[in-house]
Length: 239
Ligand code: DC
Image (cartoon, rainbow, N blue to C red; front, side, top):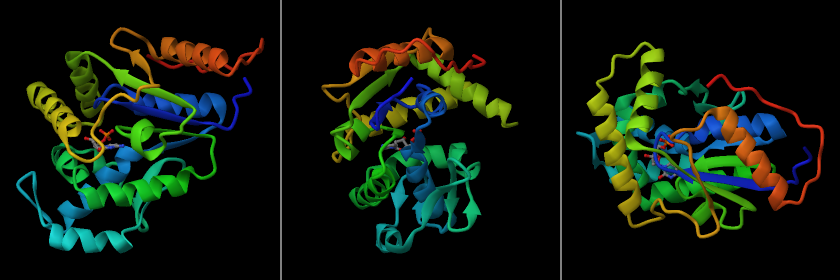
């Protein structure tokens, strides 16, 4: 399917499967995938490693804000997150980083840093980006906006399964509480809170397979951009 050079913005609550869905779209249409949450996680990892966070949310802004000027977080090897020359992809997905990322993402200077980076990456078009404020703040002119939601228990189970698959031994209730707490902080912060853009299409994937999600987005893109095509390139996901 010949998809025009658009920006696709995917926002939504934690663990609604945004990144899996965005990666599938990037494969199916040959788009570049950018995970904005990975940048917030990268800043959080950097702050934790340098002793700038006490407990889960007391942040040493006096040290963090000046450090942002030279902080080099970027993507290599497809969509792996790097801090300078170091791959930190696995290290940014731990519960420790997840527990401190929302307070870090509420700092206006951190948001300005991430927004600047995302807009640099996004200049070339043909990108699919996921996050919380892509359709509302980072790319308000994105030609296609999706807002993803799913049932709390389903989301927590997905996160839990991911962690188990990585060899971790999470506590289900802790994973669920962490999700809810992040949603609360993300939705109520002053700068760019998580909310649905007025022109976003809602995708509730609580009871959908990945295959159904791909069928859904294909139909949406075809209708939206009036694309007539008989030969479809299918991506067959496992779930
Ligand atoms: O999508 P994720 O769980 O990897 O995101 C990590 C955190 O980053 C999330 O709790 C909120 C924050 N975030 C944000 O505030 N704005 C974005 N565009 C993306 C993520």
